[in-house]
Image (tube, rainbow, N blue to C red; front, side, top):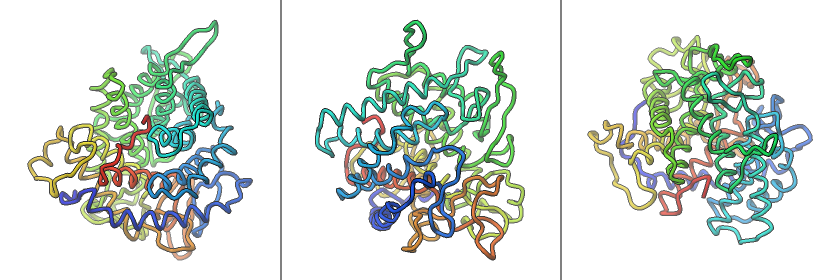
Length: 454
């Protein structure tokens, strides 16, 4: 990856302003979506459609409207997000069958509570209690989905079953974090109280140990023997193989570790800090050095079988219109925020205030300063905020183009005349692009630091 050392949050504000203008129209267009068909997942010929696996994307739809209000103060988007959260998100609070509580519930109830805590929406005791109760239950329900390991720890198991640990579930730890911060615990048989913070630590440690390889690459899934809790092998659902790196899984790890480091520092708990810090740095280093093209956009898997057809792809800008392997812009949107948060955590950037206009090469090479990660995050975002990744066509409902969902299963749309998926968007890609744009906007404008536990 070729890191642009001259970028600052302030220099991206013109692009971010254009981004929010385009985003507004996309959110309005989705208000007419027929939810009876299932939650919108990805676009086909520019129109959002459902794709059954689990209902893990509905929170991104309504959470996007809340982020739009956060960025622009346009009250219509607050109304969209607040009304749909109250009317449609309740089943996700008590959903015992998935590992996606952080995606659905923190994106909706969590964002709304954060806005009230920040004074962005009026204080209302009953509304506050509504959001807090939803988040307490969500955190406990998520933590109840538990497998003990042979080494004395445990993990939140995936929708595949008690044997399965998914790397993306690290971002659902936000649901446990919020519930813990609100004073909640998981109650088990005989009124046994289980600490949600303790389960957060165990799960994060399990992902660091079993899903993150020594070189910083990740396995999408870790498989365990449920009879004795012993680890058996890596696996992959959406990647090319257990021994390559599915880049969206890598991005989930980058962001999840960085966020948990920030949260634990904020509450004064440094348990497992070296382990999580090393995992965050390893995954972010792998992304920068091995997983992306020169402009910061990755192809869908680092071991994709036809990458060699693209020549020295890591030294060239990404090409979403090639004939061999698709890029995944959604992985880039997630990874950008992970890079920025780790960079700040390591001292690369303060919470707010004016920043120097250029990063020195000597500081950039000092990993512990965090500057390398900060500038890399800005570089990835800079690429996403422009064509061919930013969707400027009014008839296209997606915001960030060239996202893929499940390439091994061939779920993604391949346009006529093309050999691989391209030109389409996803709910998670669009949401996380909005989230990282808001993050950088707040830094540039000296606004409160964007954190899920605010």
